Length: 364
Length: 106
Image 1 (tube, rainbow over the protein chains, first blue to last red):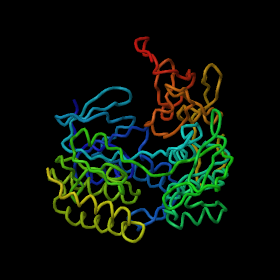
Image 2: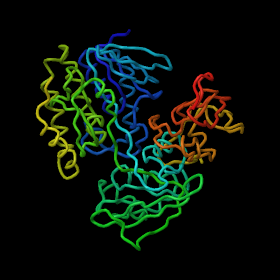
Image 3: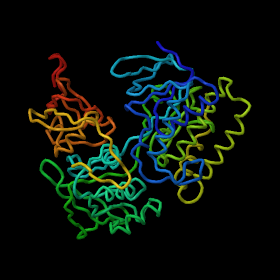
């Protein structure tokens, strides 16, 4: 069995920053990633980020992934294991891994969970037909592998993922005849939504998909207007010929290992489902297990990076690394998080975190 | 279908390779996921549901949902959305739970 001072699971925005922050303090870090490359879901994000310079504003997600991955790979304090899936957590603190097809175990003194999230599905007749895909999956297919999913794509969900992926479909030369949104308003940042509107894509708010049609794969959908109680309005059904339907109706944190480790978990709808209770430095109810990024609550990549820094700094500090600079760096990270979560776009995450704190202080 | 020109991205592909899907020769690029190569070749049905035999395709593209499980070089339940393509692979539609060395059957 292998030993590690700090084990980081997942190399998306949160995990990369966690590994770097801890290693920069002098801690020895092992970073595991199930994909053959670092970057998590950043690698498929071609849009530019917001925020301040510290948060990589005006840079494209995949460029941020390239930059951070290079820093991680060059850092002597970080051991990188790609093609490595964390399988489970055991009572004695051992984490089992599949490393390039072989079984291995590691016993870390500290564990930083940066496993991210998976896409939610939506139920309607024939929702399992090939051609009905996760919007993030289509983004991977297009932006990582250079393959377009079909000729005409309808999108369900006018949140950020829905409108950003719609725009990227247009960039790849695919028709997007409709974005369908159950809420009466557009959830995405308006800078993204305006782009697709300017390119002529209609956004149908207060609408949903009633059913999908096709023999072996998707050929057509029926959409319908819904009332305040989310019930279909008779007579408003419309058929749309599409060969792909993308589902962008939110994400659920990937928390299996946190449950296995016995972390206290609570259900917070605004954060995407079950999340770990944690201190303000992101330490869960199990000492030396931290959460950062989407696994702790669905947010976006900029906040995930700042959370990664907080978790990495604190995990390292717990072993005596970087004590002198810790408070200042922590305070700076907190200010960044507060600014990212301010204003109307941060309302959902603020309300989720408030509900989480209503369960009380995390105790270990 | 593959993207020929993209305003932002430049796709770096591995060597062109051949593999078979249910006995039919298909072309793809080394290292891309098997399911991506199949999608580019117009194959959208990757598996069937166990009880009702409904067609199933790609869904999550991150190896989580098992909708794309296929038999590859005789090994069942390979997550083709994340498994890198190699020259000469034998990719087959899997029925049932799949057999491992003839021991287990669905």
